[in-house]
Structures are given as structure tokens and as C-alpha cells.
Image (cartoon, rainbow, N blue to C red):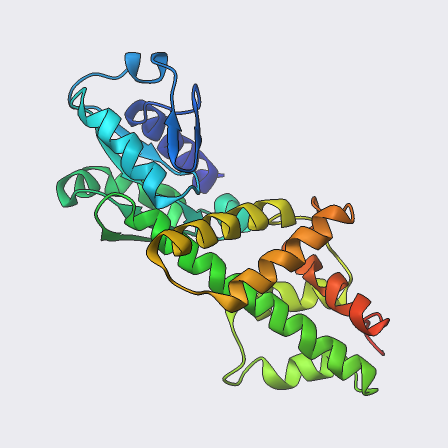
Length: 253
């Protein structure tokens, strides 16, 4: 109970610092904000934008803030609903060192790891990198489970055998049991990961960076959305891989 009270106090403090951007909306390559978004902010205030958007959008929003003397941090998170509940999120921050230092205690209420990764936009660049790795891990794990199932080997035993080795990861530990239990209740929805990878690929295009694996997983997520699975957890990538081999992964014991 004390932990929850502490988290609520931190959230209340955070709301005192943030001038919410929720009154407006943004699109990649175009910042569209209602003037009232910043009307409640004054010089010296700080906006902490914890949404996952394209880095260029963060930079354009920050430029609008600067016109009013308002500072900004872009601070997307990773860790899903469990991390938010437990206050153990990873928070990736972009912005000025001084502004980051001023807001660090507040962000640490929600996050176990709060890291300044660079100037404005760097937080969202880091989040895009995170989403590439998570997506690729889930897709690879899906292929491994389908291969084991097709070969007649219990995928749960495969999971237990390899999770402590080099192939092991936080992604595997979090999503492997969900796949084996066929529990696709959302922690992080397919449609949201699709949105994140869309931002990844748009940013990569602007930087002329080929990302072939990311592009493939983006197509897989798009197919799942078209099949009506957009609200499933992103571990539902397994369903796509299963469909290719006409087999269903399940425990044998």
C-alpha cells in the first residue's frame, strides 16, 4: 500500500510539471497542435512527452515549446503494463541535461531505469531501437517454437533448455510462457507495435538505412491486423508463423 501511495504521489507531482500535449495531435512529418496546448504553460515549465512517436515529431514539438520558453523532454517507456504497475519501467529520455536532472526524481517514481540518451528526439530514437529488438525476438521465438512443434519436440522443454543460454532474453522470458499457454491477452497490442515499426521504417527511410528484418515483421503485424488480431498481445505473431506451417504450438505435458 505504501508503494502504491508513493507512486500516486509521484504521478501527482508529475502532473504538476507536465503541460499535457493531449489537447492536440501530431502526424509524422507534420506537427499539428491546437494553440491551447501550450496556453497553460509558461516560461520555465517543462513538458515531458512520454508517448512513442517519431523523433522528428519530438523535435518539431520542442521547437514550438521553445518559442514560449518552455522546456521539453521526450521520454517514451518500455516495460508494458506490468512495469507501469510495479514502477519498474525503462524510460528513455531525450533533452537537455539540466532539464533531465530537474525531472529525474519524478521519473524515477515510474521507472527503475531512467537514462538520458541524447538531445531531444533521442528518447524516441532509443524507443524505436527497442521496438526493433523486441519485434525481432518475438518473431524468432515464434519460428523456434513452430519448428520444435513440427519436429515432435515439446516446445516447453525447448524453452526451458535454452532460456538460460545465449538465446535467452527478457523478451523470451516474458513472451515464451504466454505463447505456450496460448495467452494472447494484451500487455502490448499488435496494433501499437505495428505503429511503432511504422515510425521505425519512416525514420529509417529519412536516414537511408535499410532495415530488412524490421520491414518483414511490420508486414507480419499488418497481416495480423487485417485478420482481426490487432488487439492481441504482440506475442500473437506466433499465430502468423503457425499459419505458414498449419500447426499450433502447445505444451505436450
